[in-house]
Image (cartoon, rainbow, N blue to C red; front, side, top):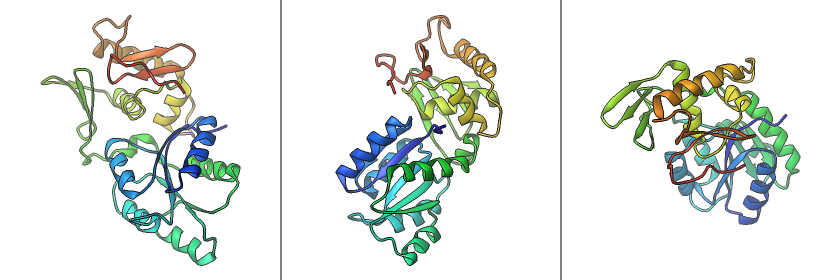
Length: 243
């Protein structure tokens, strides 16, 4: 079974980026692509990624330097490094820089998929992905979700969230605009070693709607997409992104 994750591809080869994105989206992942470290840094400021596929040889800051820099920061995503040089010394250097895995070009896409899935099975639970001292805000409608304070604001009013409510809203915000099934939500919140509890997800959705929506029976922000799951809509004038 393919594990759900949000992946960022960082590679200066547009053809490879396009092929990898198509392949991984077909496998059920959410994928974004950038050409260099500068664009990657901008994406990381506004979005959370479970895993980065990182090219070693790029214009500007190279992948080895990027990997070392990210490992020194809090909340570093998993990193799989790609390189055209498959020497043993380069493999060791890549892993010592903090990469979770290393793959030499050219490679079989199914081998990369297996490496991704293996890395994701080792990842920490989502609740730990945003440390308390990280100041991050996410806004939707009149609401602002404060990740550092683990609370929600509506205009100037602070709305307290239970730990379960925060965990669910956290995941929905990180994947805003993309419908997530009950199984995906349960996995992203609790991790692979915990039993999927769809009833608990439904209960927390119901409670959040009572807090967020003027009419919980006609939700504007926390919507149900038939056959796909639940989605947090950041702007009520836009439609959810279909997988």
